[in-house]
Each structure stands twice: as structure tokens, then as C-alpha cells.
Image 1 (cartoon, helix red, strand yellow):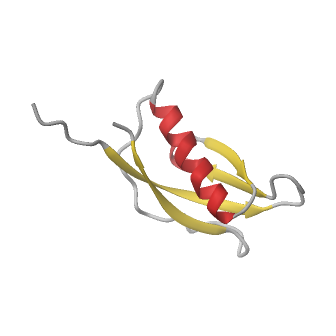
Image 2: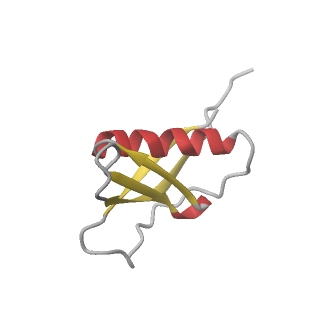
Length: 85
């Protein structure tokens, strides 16, 4: 039996905050998720981990590659891809 990886892509929004320990706040709109990161790379990794953990107990929506448009001009929007197999 050949196993096929289940991969999902979702948009995230990264917002800089005044928190000195975790200055990046991440929103994952498609699953109403939130997490924090120490820098941009950590923020993306935390979002990936959040989505993977979320998938263990909840159904995920279909992949979404549309970046949110109604964000603050200083926010960063990007996509994260997660192998949830």
C-alpha cells in the first residue's frame, strides 16, 4: 500500500507587538488560530506547528492560497504549508 502525504496550505498574518519575549503575534484565520513567535522564522514555524497540532483533534478546511487583504499595512501575510500525514 502506498501512503500519500496529506498536505495543506493556509494563509497566516504576522503582526509585530511590543512583547519583548515573543514580539510576533500570528493569526491563522481559516481555523481561528493564534500563536506567537520570537522572530519571523519562528513565527512561521509556530504557525506550522499549531496547524499540525490542531489537525490532530479537528478537521481542517481545504487548502487556501488566498492572502487576506484587510490587514494593517505593517502586518505580514504569507502562506504556510503543513504535512499533516
